[in-house]
Length: 225
Image (cartoon, rainbow, N blue to C red):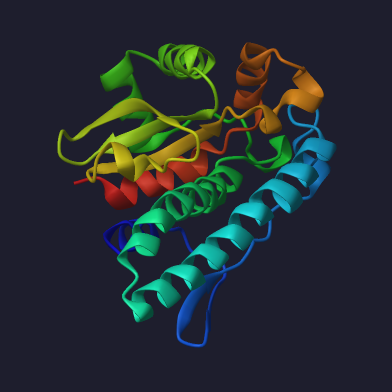
């Protein structure tokens, strides 16, 4: 139960409903067309990523929550324990992707424009420059073994920006309750393989052309202590 509550509290608003007293989740709409991020990210990848991969996480998350509710009502502690991994994986996949779509924007709508204001100052203070931050995120994302995510986060306890990585679909909250995700980059192969083949560094180089720093700045200003 604790894990389900932790994941739910960190969920961005993305179509939440209720069915027979059970909270359910739905696939959020993208704020742009599938092809709007080209040439950095192809429309084919975006459509498959959103309609197939993210939808699968939502479907399986709802299924696992329904099974969890049933197991709790029956007092089946073994089933409750067994379901935790499915809830973490699929719930994390839903949380992470819901953030990821907002972290991207078409170039005509500000994608790739450098951060300004308080976030820009914080980046210069904590990393030296935006170029240094981009290099650090790209390097750590490329070096991440297997599948996962690389994050720019606000550590509310330390009152500074940090770069973190998470494995598989683990949401950033699993690395610390004080961490607020500002920017998350998906480094699973499904995010880039069709376009960049197996060259993850090329994907990480080009994705900065469509990063939505405006969204990251809004979250930073809201969450800064």
